[in-house]
Length: 217
Image 1: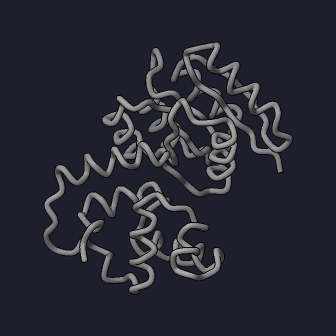
Image 2: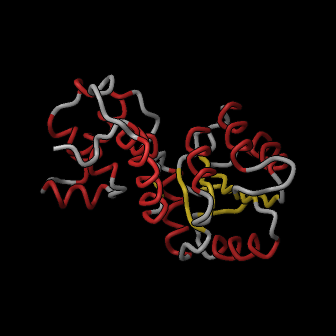
């Protein structure tokens, strides 16, 4: 199956570089390039790509507002936000808007390609470097009190899986740590998201850190 990708960034040279990477992959197709958020929203509505790569800072409509508009429209497109180290506030805002993942602009081509495939499968991810910075921001302001709603529905193994997700670990890494198969991990992840009413792994990361679960005994 070919994954159809829309690329939105106001730097033409950057778009060309990303498109060149996508063109080397037989299962990825760049269906459109645009230079601002308004055009991104319009083209997503018209073309309904599987994945949209959105820069955070764009003219007319930034990546956060564009993400929210795309999610509200319900086209089924997954959004990956491209960011840099100094944009933590934008990253968190985009997460709340419904982004399925965050990548640094310096991400190696092979990791970018892998991330697009992950998003197209309906999964989500956050670049580990971004995750560390988000964790730092969460832990600065979190004041844990009573267990958050929904946590009591999780089994002990599902809580373990949630904590691994919160550290941005992949299914393979979780499977290795728990000494189980990846299919078992996928089942646990699905149950965690369902029981907590979370859309994807990105929001599981936010949930765990927002409620101060990471680091608890």
